[in-house]
Amino acid sequence: MMTGIQYLHGFLRWVVLVLLLLSIVKAFSGMSAGRNFSKGDMKRGLFTMISLHIQLVLGFILYFGKGWSSMLGNADAMANTVMRFFSLEHMATMLIAVILGTLGHSLSKRASDDRIKFKRQAIWFTVSLVLILSSIPWPFRAGFEAYGWW
Ligand code: HEM
Image (cartoon, rainbow, N blue to C red; front, side, top):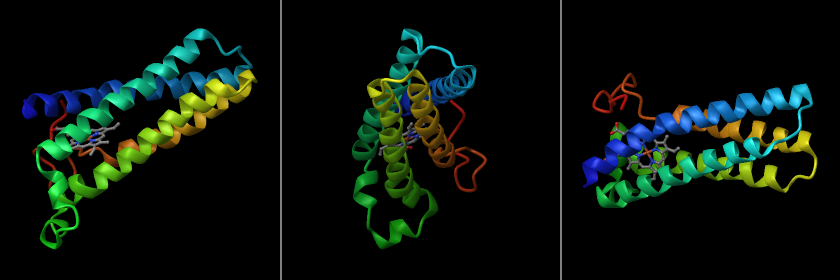
């Protein structure tokens, strides 16, 4: 069960990355071209936010289900790169990234001006993407060889 959720969480990173990238490119291009903010632009932002929320739920199931939560604050665990990463760094950074991504969609939805809608998506989704890229356990990071591209 946990292994399946771990694979799903690992695979869904690509969905999150593709949706964030697409939303950012469309938001910047819409802003510079002075395009109208369409229903499609709103839906893209919504699906981006939903993909982030799914990762959040799966991530917390793994966090509590696989015992990472109990390592938080333990001095020996904090001295270990991988244990510190999953029990603290990955959890906290991704949580912030999901909150910022959520702001990207919800603040954009609330704006009345189309240019501001694009601008809010562009800014918040970009910051969220940078945090996510910095906090994925890429297999080329020292100590993370066991975490794959799937
Ligand atoms: C957009 C958000 C997120 C992305 C893109 C993401 C991505 C990933 C990736 C790629 C892995 C490695 C999977 C593997 O190859 O085994 C992973 C592992 C993990 N993630 Fe996330 N994650 C996100 C959010 C979160 C959140 C909010 C939590 C909450 C605590 C979380 C908890 C975990 C845990 C505990 C593992 C380790 C699983 C294990 O080996 O036991 N993730 N994550």
